[in-house]
Length: 280
Image (cartoon, rainbow, N blue to C red; front, top):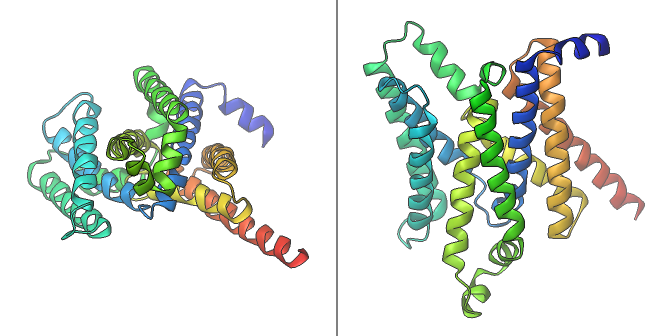
C-alpha cells in the first residue's frame, strides 16, 4: 500500500489535490469554531446551496472559469444573509433555510431548463456531493486556491482578537466602541470564500461537515478558544489528508471519504472525552 501511495504521489494531479485539500480543510476549521459558538453552523450549508445555484447559471452561460461568477454571488449572499438574520422578523436559522432552499431549487430548475449536457443527473450529483473534480484541477485552479487560502489565513491571524471578541460578547464589543457589525461582515465574506473553494473538494451538500465536525471534535477535548481552534485546524488537515489518500487508494468519492473520516474522528474524540471524565 505504501508503495502504491508513493507511486500515485508522483502524479501532478494527486499533488494538486493534496495541496488544495489541505488548504481548504485548514481554512474551513479556522472559522468553524466561531460559527459553532455563535450558533450559525448552517451558514455553510446555506451558502453552499447559493454556490450551487451560481454554478448552474455559470454552466448555462458557458463560462470557462465559473469562479468569476460564483465567488461574487456567494459573497453578496453572505452579506444579505447576515443582514437578514439580524432582522427581528426573520431569525438567523429561518434566513439560512430560506436562502438555502430557494437557491437550490432555482439552481436545479435552471440546469433542467437550459443545460445542454447529456448527463444532467451526473452533473448535479457531482456538484452536490463532489466527485473526482478535485483530481482534475489545473495549475491555475491550484494557484487561485493557494492565493485565496493565504488571504483567509492572514485575515484570521490579523483579526484574531476581534473575531474572539465578536464570538463571545458582541454586545460588549459594541459598547466598547468596536465595529462588531464590520467584523461579522468580515466573517461572512471569509466563509463565502471558503465555501467556493470547498465546492470542488466535498460538493455543496457536504461542506457544512468540513466546517462543523473538526470544531465539535476539538470542543470535546479542550475548553479555551485558542486550544480548540488550533486542535480543530490540525485535526481537519489530518482528516482531509487521510480522506484524500484513502479515496485515491480505494477508489471512493473524495468528498464522502473526507467527511466519513471527520465523523470517525469525532467519535474517537467523544470516546476519549468520556474516558477522561470517568478517570477524573
